Length: 251
Length: 356
Image 1 (cartoon, rainbow over the protein chains, first blue to last red):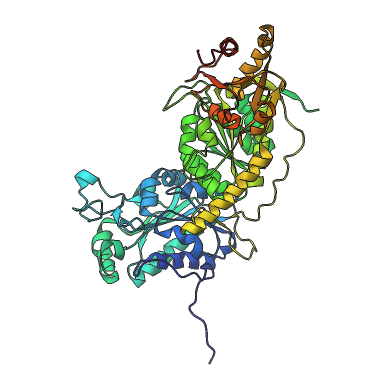
Image 2 (image 1 turned 45 degrees about the horizontal axis):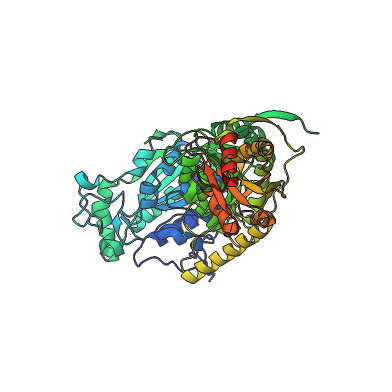
């Protein structure tokens, strides 16, 4: 009988064990991104930009050239890399505080300029690394350490929907939102991420995939409870789907 | 010999950057450095480089961080309020040891201040400016020709030391026109950058550009290595001009102030005062050796700045109390006159230094 290897570590991941908490989906998304780099054969010309936040150590995990950026500035750093090395495959990996709060200007204008970069945006509705404060994507009513009585829209404002915003910009070629709370969704997320990289390779413009994620530690839930909470609370507000695809305009 | 051109300071610096092989520029409009940005917009596409009008000063410096990481010679420019915004990024450049050139055409402050020339960003430029223990090399041209030469030098120093370099001008140097000559020939090839994040392209291990050292001991080791680099820069790169080293009194001034002081020397002679000029060309490292050359025979030093008194602290640190150090400054965009400086010198001679 011939043994066939059907599963292994993607070449685009290093051997370093992830530091993420039990039940954290960062590991899944890292793997999906790495699989895309492998399958597209672009690892050797990939340059990744790590954020400030839980994924700050992404440079230890992706087995390609990596740059650690200041909080929120990854799209500007990626712009500098891509314009200097146009045949590099440049991606940023950013959380919700990084991208949707402190880095709002950078993400909006990178998209508006149509930078040929791919943005992986992890939305878990909370600040993980600093210990569970309100994120720009925290849901109304959600308790965090800085919304101890729950997010009150009239006091703390409303959660931000990034893909819907960016889809309005002509420079954005591909904008999607996916989730990784169940195996079928993981497969769909992979397809979206791959599409986003393909858009970059085809020089079609800016691409972004928001991944609705979970934070069991700071949500104060077990990993299974957290995945259920994603489905019941996050997905009704953060609608999954492709908001913009090349050639079709706003979906 | 190369052609003599009449150029504005801002444009001459932009052209010098291109001649030095700068192929990435990002900037945001702010007076009085707009011509630099506009010149780059026109010129970069002609040489196959990139010009980006960024959404903010913060984005511009982070684009320089990215381009520099990818091995390009990269530059941004601004004036004081915009330079404040860039400090976060400059700290990252220093921490991650990414080369980059930052031009500051200083204007009056604090806050929105004025749009006229000033030298009130000396502390910010020479003390790091952003968070953490770091230094930027600071070059202070006194003429447009020197601005050309120092801009080209800035790229060499940035690459050699993998460190941000600041070209510190002011609104006067940016706006005025003088004849300049550019060196002929193609730009020199930048040194190899085996550390750059260009994509691995056959390299065995990934390159990582990073300023995070999560363990205190590792971060201290990193800081010690940076400090050793800064000591080397201090030992090798201090530059100055000394006019009349045998003089009795010394004016200490850089940039536009030094031009005013230069005009005082002959008039002081007529008044029976022998006055020399000590002009720092590098503000960091501060040229302490120039002070050492004259401090024994000097009667006193008069530091002249377009600030409330910033470089004078470095002069006092170098003089170490051996001789009196006086200060005269104008602020907010006002420029000292030669007569004002001469009056100060006369008061110093009468033993009434500081009574102005």
